[in-house]
Length: 339
Ligand SMILES: Nc1ncnc2c1ncn2[C@@H]1O[C@H](COP(=O)(O)OP(=O)(O)O)[C@@H](O)[C@H]1O
Ligand SMILES: [Mg+2]
Image 1 (cartoon, rainbow, N blue to C red):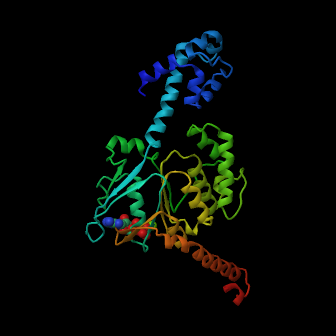
Image 2 (cartoon, helix red, strand yellow):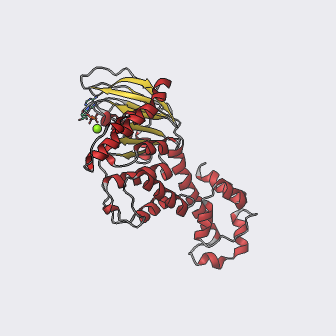
Image 3 (cartoon, rainbow, N blue to C red):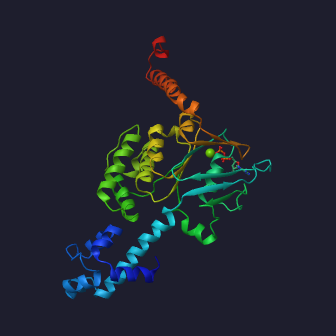
């Protein structure tokens, strides 16, 4: 809806319906202490019953409030429109480091998890960066990224920048002197979440589930370990990010429960790219992109046989993990462990 249409809608629609269409409108009314306003009328008529003095307190008359309401909902819908409707992402191949063409056209639908595998130096991080900046044949790889089948123009690239893609990278630094709670609350509010307290709680709980070492909600961000901050970012991204695309660069050594992380993300109906050396993560994805010499050399769909083998691989992985833990704590390895 453009501004004029939105204004017409606000003037002619009763508040009950508006609140149904935009539950966030409740927050707006609460900000102006108008929770109790009659909901059976459109805002201008409902305001007549309230009286100008309530609004005068905020330095507004009823027309001013209507305008504020319009701006508020416009901003909200803009965030949702520019980020919420990515149904597909397409990678058009460029060239590898040997200048050989990639010959790839890969379209990924919302809800798919794609892993990116390949040796160190093969171009995994570069591929994720191309997606993050919505490359338009203007990066060293000359790849092009399409959103919903269309090449975003410069303005869209700029507007989507930072909103389209949530990048969980190898290096994460929190510079702000906030507690976990303050950080989550700030995010929930800036993303116009409808039920801040509930979302903050949910994020905190799932971050703690993901993290090997537990932390409290009043811990300072700067005191979190690498694993804890990554767990927090994953929980935050899965639970309240508007970004329809999530990029995760090698989380294996991050001290978090990797399998749970991918499950939380897979449920979020986003497009998830995860670069990894971990077979369990690679095979949990719907497809995997195989990188070689800086180029996409293959795209493999996870087969049923591979999926079925996950349980067996997990068993091997658990055995290895147990051995690692034993060695670390100075214990002896017995044959029992290998059964
Ligand atoms: N297609 C390409 N053309 C030119 N340089 C590339 C290409 N792909 C990757 N690179 C460069 O090669 C180096 C290693 O790639 P990187 O993405 O860091 O590998 P990985 O994450 O798999 O270890 C980086 O400097 C990257 O910019
Ligand atoms: Mg890398």
